Image 1 (cartoon, rainbow, N blue to C red):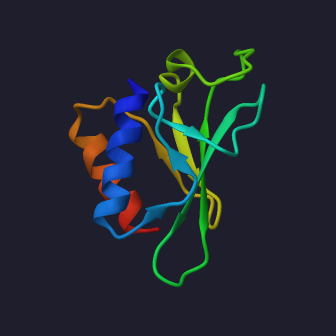
Image 2: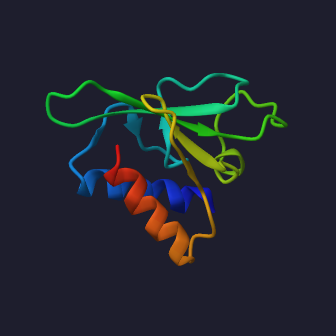
Length: 110
């Protein structure tokens, strides 16, 4: 489930001193104030210290026609792109060593 990966990413970002500016929780767990109706991305803005904010976009398959975010849509997120350098974190199998290693390395390289 991608919601679990979003939670793992959020915790790893926080462990590394990042603050997620436009994240808030509700019944769906993850919704941003900047979501694009009918679009294919969810975005977080992260900051650390005095550094310029970085935008993270989460890719969702475009076969969804939606007006609001739902668990089904959030569970189909397959990657996260960091806009500054364009690096991607793919949402591999959650119990794999590859996922945990890639998550830590990707966040460390932000």
